[in-house]
Image (cartoon, rainbow, N blue to C red):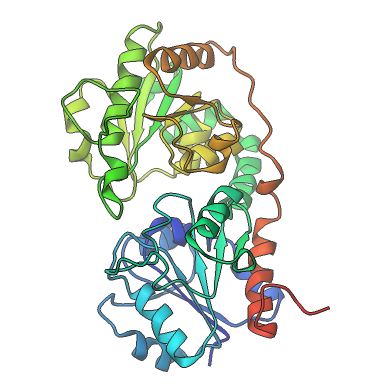
Length: 372
């Protein structure tokens, strides 16, 4: 028997488990992490222990194998993910469940599966990164006590690595992670995002967009990239441009821009890459949060207002550009060293402990708070 069974399939949920093992051990909880899909790559790169599970395996068999007292599942783009089946099977057996939500995006799609009910497979409790996401689930009908904003779990991991990188120095880090052609130039990292997935309309051109790109692509992230590339034409000296692929991207997704991109990054450690940069730009990727924690000037280019899928953007801590002029103005000031970075805020500290305590209280007391 295991106290807690966790299943993850997508990168965002997998990242929520990075560095959690000592916290589980400290509270005496026996936790087994299982994974399928692209989550496996994240856990392997981060050297996290997990057991591979075939996504076609039945939820009943998985629960029979481990006989957990609590089942936790991460959200996934796959509407037929084993995670939803595990949540449903645990509910049928009366086993408490916890959902791991890594971001605000597509909240109304995360737990519906193939149904029209956005809460059809929702676990008993949700661990979410911020108050924006918490409010969104409450709007969908989840009671306030069932949604807990634990913070951005990856923040602890980022902070640990920043300390190590500071000891090595930015120059040494850049020499290790980027080609020689980048060494004497400013480096701009563009954080790519996925195409399609659940809630696909969010990732496609819409009538209310305030930036329009070049008109050749309707993909949201292409439009954002085009605005950035066009702004850089008017900024001299032009920085070395790196596109960091999302785990669900392929190089072919950005083939049309190969003559304007200096380097496409996939296998490099993303934190090493960010630390080596001078400016990080994207739309609403969580990589922007990591860049902000690395104390790099960070810009969210969003094609309409409001489009605040992550709280640091919504609060204005990470600045937002919604027009072509704003994109150019922010990039010029950031590359010229004329931009002051805002503090990250309290949401970014002690997050692992809060998540571990949530699991502990559900396991021991059947609640997210221990009884008085």
